[in-house]
Length: 209
Image 1 (tube, rainbow, N blue to C red):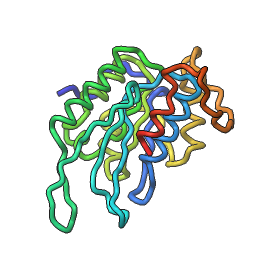
Image 2: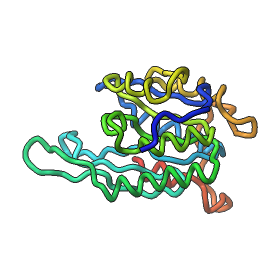
Image 3: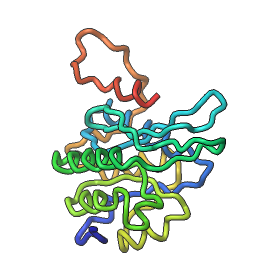
Image 4: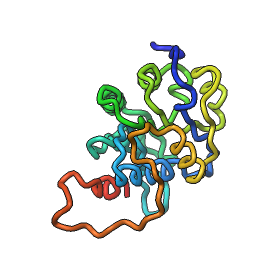
């Protein structure tokens, strides 16, 4: 298992430190969608939470930002508590999605979370290290209870952001590669036309929502 990566640029690593009540998954997904629409080359994963009619989460999927593919990562165990465990096949597929993004040298690698699994040496810990060693900008989310483990993992430096869109956008303005489309303009999405290219990223928003 890969441990703390050497020689990573801390200014290009950011973690949104969030509380249980924060909608960090929605924040990361919305930010990623807007950057893709702006033309930035993003790769990695954002999380989609599937809920039942009562608002209870019944499933989790990770969305591959390079393809739009939804990857199932949870196995429901039944019972009134709606408990679940991570799906090993889904986790392996998710790891491959991050590795593809690193190999493609995308402008920004997004990994949905550094949480309990990663803090204990499992999950996508190796893929986090892979992105850092490659020197690519990296954005993730870390629950408050895992913040110390995250700091131990990355060493000194790295940005810790509050769970707000403004904070994430401000970090990206500083961390984005020079050739990235990082002018964050408040524009309403334009209507889709027949002339738009086939790889228009509206599919991502449809998949996440």
